[in-house]
Image 1 (tube, rainbow, N blue to C red):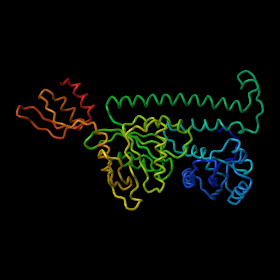
Image 2: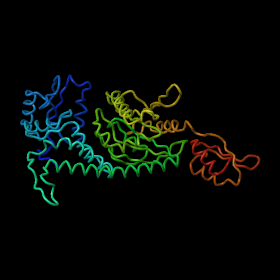
Image 3: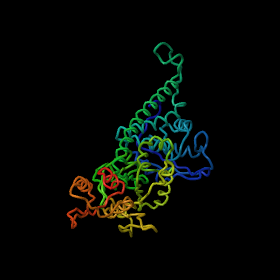
Image 4: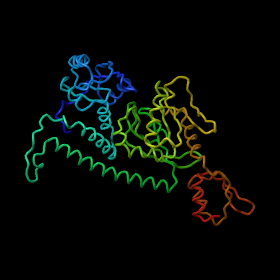
Length: 422
């Protein structure tokens, strides 16, 4: 946007360096999936190891020469690093390699920019990109000539760099104002759902675990779902009917990823707020992925970071059709409550078990009893039927109606209070 830089392309050289100074190494397999999700085509994958990054070029001169040879051989337009590069390292590498260089954060931002569809999602992506760009302005221009001063111009002696910094600061300020309005609208929706006592169920999980497929199967929403990382960026809400429980709101959210830059977590705060405010989390796991235990740990770390680790959680072990020896089932804890459900969103196997498990977890505080009402209380009867809370109806010897009901305790108490029953 503000840079005079080499243009990017689809033909890409991938670089991954194992660093002794890094406690947790990035996953090269996940990195390649990220690259393919962005639309780029890897033509070479260069790996190496160092004790620590070179301050100027991140890699050593020998590895730089190897990367340069690969760029020339494959006529690549883009070199992607599975690491965070400093602005000066990016510029120095571009100068040496004569092509566009992008680090892991820049790659994720590029994917986000492609995937965002809603107004809020686009604002969040732009905010994250501007915050990332602001740190890279210093060496982004080769001509820092002072601009002409004067009335209604850029200010006396303002440089191109200073003008760009001011433009970015102003745009960030405007985006934050717009996002504040979106958050206010979202909070208003939450208050409305809370007044109606409608429980919120939020889908969470590692990116590409199949959250959107589970969402589509449960709601028939038809939202975009694909076998790629970050297929979903925008929070989507749908109402669903749960067996023996009633109505709930299901939320599909952005997928998590290991070592997600903190600025991206902040930029998607409004989306993640739906997770923090949920009554129940459905942690979707790709059980066919050999690294699923590691991914579970990564998701739990993010949940802790955003303050959602104390919300009741049900694991949904998805894609059992791609793994051997797994059948639909429900695992239970020592208290008898569901802890994990094994399903396949693609085939629909086990989805009935999932709905029943959700109802059971949300229905821990459910009133299930016989309610006797008089002939003058037809309005209460109608409201109970409207909520799907009446299982059976009969008449006692005094001609009063006996309703066998089942509904959340808060709903029950509110109905009694509104109808002024003792």
